[in-house]
Amino acid sequence: MQLLIIKLKASGSSPEYALLGKKQDSATFISSDWKTIRSLIRGRRVLALIPTNEVVITSVNIPSKNKKQLLQAIPFSLEDSLADDIENLHFAVKQDETSNHSQVAIIKRTSLDKYLNTFQENGITTHFVLPDVLGQFYRKDSWSILFSEQHDASVRLNELEGFVCDESMLEMFLTKSLENGNPKQVFTNRDKLSLPESLHTLNIEPINTNTIDYQSVLSALPLNLITNFSRQSTKSVINWSAWRSSFILAGLLTSVWAGIFIWQNVLLQQQSKLLNQKIEQVYKSSFPNGRIVNASAQMKSALDKLKANNGKVVDSPLPLISNISPLLKEYKDLSLNGVNYKNNELTLTIQSPSLTRLETFKRDAAKKAKLNVNIESSTTTSNNVEAILVISPLTTSTTKNATPNNSMVDNT
Image 1 (cartoon, rainbow, N blue to C red):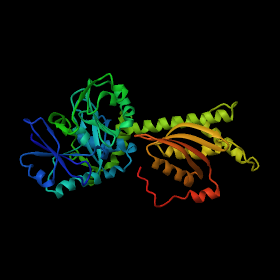
Image 2: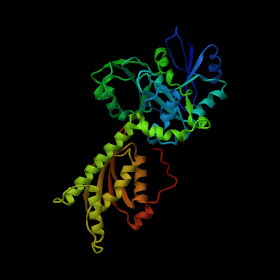
Image 3: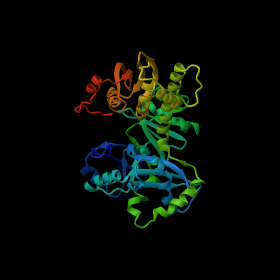
Image 4: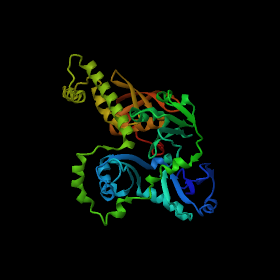
């Protein structure tokens, strides 16, 4: 099969192309225009590679060999782990014929239509659409990791599985995969010392970022995004609600793994664990003889008693912690590294992706938690900002000064 591979880095961006076939097993992407690419279509199948950050790649285990029943059950099995309504999503499925395991690729209908319309407007009919991570170099029992100029890491783990993350988070995202076993080798466009320490003992092989391999592409084609179904296009002929009870029964016999969201849950759990540890530390320092059962609930109870203390002002960290904790949990990308309290001021050591993000947190603290946040100091590195925030009750005069400036734009 002769392939014309077209890569779009974003909707509306200039296309890049490469030609592959049995006699040309590797090629380098060339930046071009639609007219030139259109002239290369004759005798070739067209594969479109789109940004992986618009596609969710995950897997499920459902005991059904009937393809129609499988396609009906999969959306419901993943419904709780997806941010969008399943009516607005398109699902592509590759079932393992020897087990109940199915690999699933999910994309918003609007996003898929946007890319397909771009090709149609330029006179090109696509036969295959894949997330670009599945266009990376792949060999059995090996991984490929490509780093971009935007500090992203694109990881292909096998024929039909991969993800993209910030390179600073790569080691954490690979933890689950390493628990399942190490790859025989890792192909990458960086040297060994640039990789997470957990990979240093593995065999590292260099690859070119802009090269595509025929064998690697063929192995991913079964997860073609323009096959299978979108729920909106088929709901006129399928009674989806009738399968809800069947899915509940199937759920007792299956284990469902939504891979793309696991690292988000891990990050949130780590953040929550650290916050709870800090709450317990403050509670122990405030009530050294107290027994901790539920620190958050006990602190709230103590705070209520303090508020009822005949209107007297009590120097305690409990009110500040009680007010700031919900906001810290909303900002999942902020890492809490330290906490201290003195003279009615709570001092937090925070790690943030940017200074702009801290300014947004500061405005939200004033608006939502009625707290004044002062950025006492900050240290900026290539990947993040470490800052010391001083938090105090928001006075009337401070409230006026804390009103957000509408001309400021948050680009985080």
